[in-house]
Length: 160
Length: 157
Image (cartoon, rainbow over all chains, first blue to last red; front, side):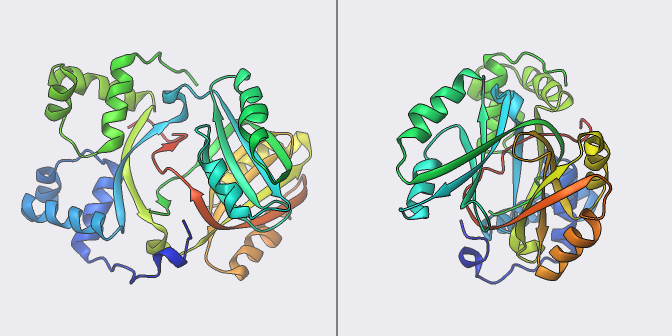
């Protein structure tokens, strides 16, 4: 999705109550409507309707974020992709269909795309390169680096 | 990082909450055919081992519609650990990973102006000891992104 273009609707403005709800849910996304209501001095029904409104306007989403390891992913690769002689978006669409590619950013610079790829074992590199990426036309360069430590990984702001 | 072995029930619990993070333990219990106590215990264990975290993701618009800036940093090997720490301490930097091949480190930041990016890269990062090169690319958009899959690095809930 485009960062600006697809979200050119009005930016939802938050009142004090909504900011309070978001702060509590950020700390603990499992806080019940009643717990939130008691802390903010409103009714559970009000909390429920505000959360619904915030999620429907795509201002925020309460999520259960799971770790790569919970899905058995042992290896993370950051891969730069260069496309030649073909529409970059068409290549991105095909890459997006690959299950091991969990994020794609279209970028400026030496590469056209930056992928994050999650694999369960080194055996899957062969499948990725020969069967999956190898069958996509238009990729002229692929530069893969192995992530051996994730020092910081914030995920509380994202395109919704 | 110690990873507990997850069984089939853990996977089904994670999958259920990934679909709806606000669903009640009772509802999940009846859906999966176990007791509410089992869901509560399993969830606590998954949270404590940083396998799952319940939180809020706010949309880019709420942060002033920033662009994601990716910085591939080449550095002297002896400085990589100190650089990882220095970069992580910068509030504007959202992620830092250590890499083999391509770069020594890859860092990302959400930035709302070219001036702010220049300030960060030229004044704060390039001046750090051991930095040889910073390759910068701006994300124009993300055709694939799942906010529910990440590395949970913070303290256990």
